[in-house]
Image (cartoon, rainbow, N blue to C red; front, top):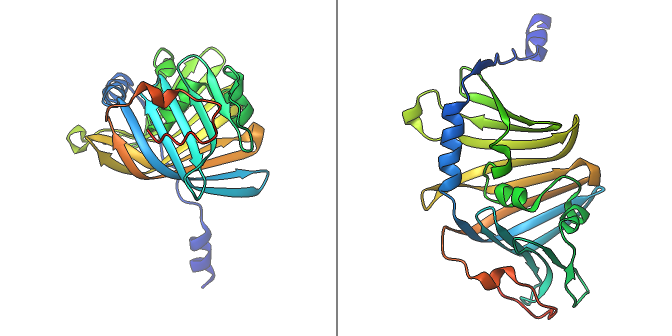
Length: 250
């Protein structure tokens, strides 16, 4: 009996990772990135900050490639209660109980989500994609026999680490990004995890996205329940007015 119990508590053998040429994977991820043009989705959002949890049942998410985004939460009567917009140049915020729009610049996103999360990077995360800014870095790819890989993109003090499922049989499908971590000078700025991937308009969209900011002690979980990939998006989706009754759900 004792040997059996001992066997149950033995650690699982570690997966051996071997360095492999990163170019084929980077090319596949680049194809996947270009296959995404935009997203319009309805989601629920759970925000956990300092151990306190808040759930918003009705959240609109609009993403224009890695150029612009809009995230807006609605109340039970369809009224807008909070909105965050990046119009490609500025971060626009309309916070709860305020009717005015704040033009904050990039600092507005750090105010909400913590240091290091750039607006274009958030666009990439909302679509389960690799960011443009990471593609110029020096790549290192380590893979196991089962196709579980770690891709490291190093650029100076900034390190982006992706966990990727990369089929050994390339006819078996395209790679899938499972998680993403960004660190600077060895300090983790944020993490993202992508779950429950669905093929929508020939694009692999994760329908559950978790973003963690250790510096803010914050976790945001988005669950897409209605998603439209690569549909036309009107420019008005990326404007924000002082009117709290603006309930535009582009």
